[in-house]
Length: 214
Image (cartoon, rainbow, N blue to C red; front, side):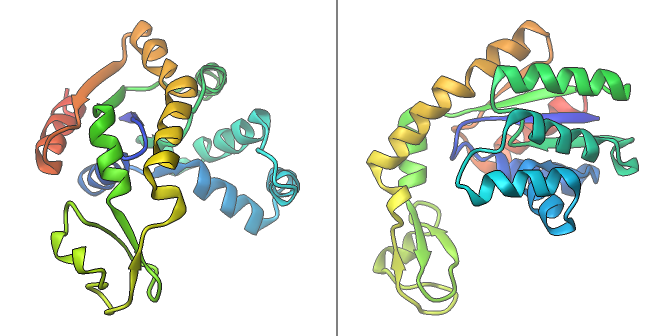
């Protein structure tokens, strides 16, 4: 079972990825994790990636794809994997297709968690961060934190600059321009499955699980 999750920031991909991992034991393939490990291990690609990161530049596609290929070549992915945060563009999707073909693997399902724009803005701007323990909370899911006090350590909660309406709206527009075309890409390949992400987490999981069970 080789799964990819698609969805805008705030759609709940992380939550559903965690449920898939728990239910099916699939290794979680996250480009952020791969980059950090490659840099820490000082692999050739990791050192190349670090050069761009230190300069404040985006890591080029060919480096990211090389790192993803290395990760997908490892034995623990032979029984399946879940891709999270990659690909982000159609160019990367084409490259990923080539890597999977080379490795004799293919995507079982691409699950798109669909949430309307207003709901995404509400979710993302509802986040609050604790100044003390750095915990992240949500005023929608946890209305008790409206008093501005961290439920974990009694520290002060605040809204990060990147969680304001203006910043969140910009992030969502960037997603629409670059990543949303992947929906059409995988729809054309016949592997895309849509899930209504406007519902309760458990209801979304029921739909995702049904797709994975075929």
